[in-house]
Length: 136
Image 1 (spheres, rainbow, N blue to C red):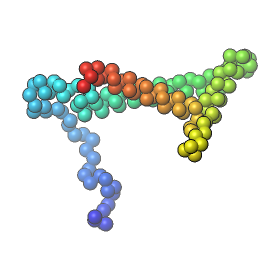
Image 2 (image 1 turned 30 degrees about the vertical axis):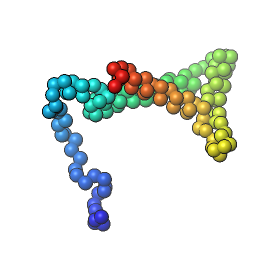
Image 3 (image 1 turned 90 degrees about the vertical axis):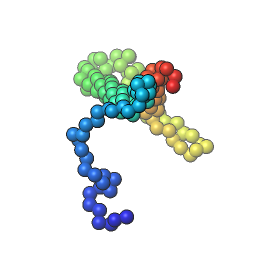
Image 4 (image 1 turned 120 degrees about the vertical axis):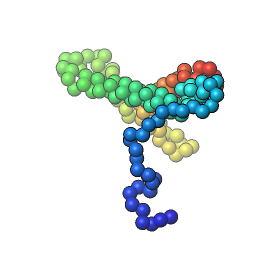
């Protein structure tokens, strides 16, 4: 290994942000049609997965932003109502509750983080299954 490397070792070529990624399928027409499903063709799979990831993260950020704005700007009369206090207690429970797994000597993350991970996994696997409806 050359010890006089300059820059980052994993980028040995300049990054080209203007390169063309046009598709030239040199296979037969049937093979090209088979390959062009969204989860078989790497370029389209990256695009589909990226869009779903951005949509999910924007939705999560939006929900928590709206909740934060409601907490900050709601009047005190609303904050004293039983539904508001119930919402506050449930959100605190999800924020702080962790579970101990003694056999692994491990504490789980907060319950809200676990629920968010499960919802994210269900969302992404649901999108994957929907995109591969032909079963291949």
